[in-house]
Length: 107
Image 1 (cartoon, rainbow, N blue to C red):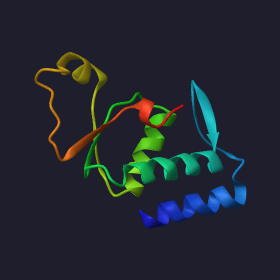
Image 2: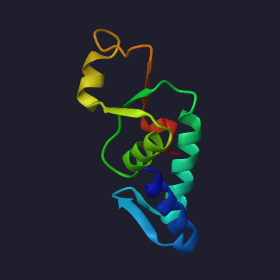
Image 3: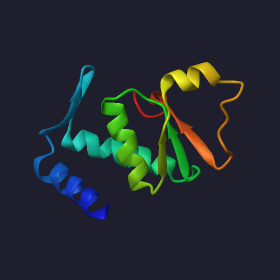
Image 4: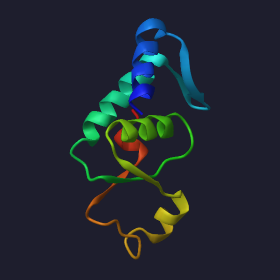
């Protein structure tokens, strides 16, 4: 994984204005993507080892997945329907887990 993030850093530095990722809601350059990944990874440092990821496929997912990898976290994808149907009753996260949804990293 270290090589992936070293490569991302190099690409952000050398050709940061080039498109890195896009979805139906927008796009990010290499520099923007790397900056958002770094910021979220820093926020995740004090969080539990296992992170439940609740987000649709898209830019936010890419940011969260990469940030979790950079922070050394284990990602557990959570389907929206599972979270919605079971929130407040039988869906519980272990206390050594954390839950991540788009509002935590997208503006």
